Length: 493
Image (tube, rainbow, N blue to C red; front, top):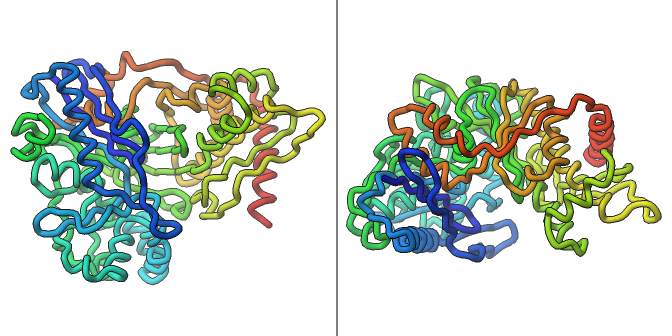
C-alpha cells in the first residue's frame, strides 16, 4: 500500500510515493525539470497559471505510476503541500478567472497596511495575529478594486493547494490553517473574520467549505482519475501550506519544537500554544497543522529570512568555484570570525524581520592584501548563520523557548560551519533529517486519526546527524556581536 504526496512550489512540483506502513520513500519526481516561469506584468508582481501546476501534477503522477508499475488501487491516500499565500479565483464552472497572484507578489502591500491602521493594530494583533499585510485577503481586495469585471464573476477563491485538490476531485474546499495563512481567521472567536470580510467588502460566500487538515477531504473523481491515472475514489487526506508542512515533515507539532529551513531563503518555524504577538511586525503567526478549533491552540510562528542560500549561491557563481562542497572546504581553513571580514547577507529584497527594510548585501572589513575567497566563503556562511540567530532571538522575545531544532539535510545545513555556528550561539542541538516536503505530505496521510506519534516511527531511519553546541562559544559570540554592530550601523542610518 502507498501514499502519494504533492508539494506545489513556485519553481516546480515534487511528487513523492511512500510505503504506507513504513513511511519509506519509494520515489520522488520533479515536474518540470527546469524552473517554472512567473509572469510579472509590472514591477513587484508575480503570477502563475494554476492550470500549469495541474498539468505538471498530472505528468508527475503518471510518471510515478508508469516507471514503478504501481497499481493505482494500492495508492490509499493523497497529501498536498503548497506555496503559501497565493490567490486562485474560479468562476461557477470552476475555471480560473485569471492567473494566480502568488506569495512573492507585493501589489497588495499598501492595501494591507491601510487595513492594519484602520481596522486597528490592537484588533489585528489579537484577532488575526498578523497585519493583513500582503496576504491572500489583501490580494483579493486588490482584485476587487482593480479588476471589478473579474471580481463579479468569482464563485470561490482558493489557495494553490485547494485548486490542486479541486482538480483531482471536483470538490472546492479549504482548511482552517489555509484560511489563517490568508489572514481570514479570527483566533479570538475561532471563526472566519467577519470584520475583515466587511472591511474589505468581500462576500462570505466566496469562502470555500472548510474541511479538517487531516482526514477525508475529498475523493478523486472521473476527471481527476482520467488525467492522472489515479483510481476513482482515492481519498485526499491532508493539505497544508509549505512551511507548516515542512515543520510536519520534521515531526514538529508541539510547543518548543522548531523547524529550520536553509534554502534560497531561510525559515525558522516554531510551534507555540500562546497567542502572543509582541513581535508580529517581524514574525507571522498562523494556525499550525494540528490546531484544533475550540480546543488545542497550536500556533506556528514563522520568521522568514530572504537573504539566505541565495547569498551563498551568488558567491559560488562569482568566485570561480565548482560546488558548495568546495566552498565549504575553503571556509574550514579560515578561523571563526573570518579574520574580521563580515557579510551582511540581505541582498534578496526587503526583510520582514528588519521591519521591511531593504539593506542589501554588505561585505565589510575586506583587506585586499590579506583576504581571499576562502575568507569570503567563511564570512558568508557565518553571516547567514548570524541572520538565523538574530531572527530566532526575536522569536524568543515573543515567548518561544526551544526544546529541539530540526532541519532538513539541505545545502546550508550540510555545512558544519553554518550549523555549528547556530547550535553554539543558541546553545541548542540541531537534528538533521533526510526528508522533504513531498515525503512529509505523503506521510501526513497516516495522521487522519490524530495520531501524531506516527511520525516518530516514520522518521527513525531519516536521522542523518546532530550538531551539538560547542563548549567554548567565545569566538562565535565575539564574531556575532561584531556582525550585530555592523547591522545596527546600517539600520540606524
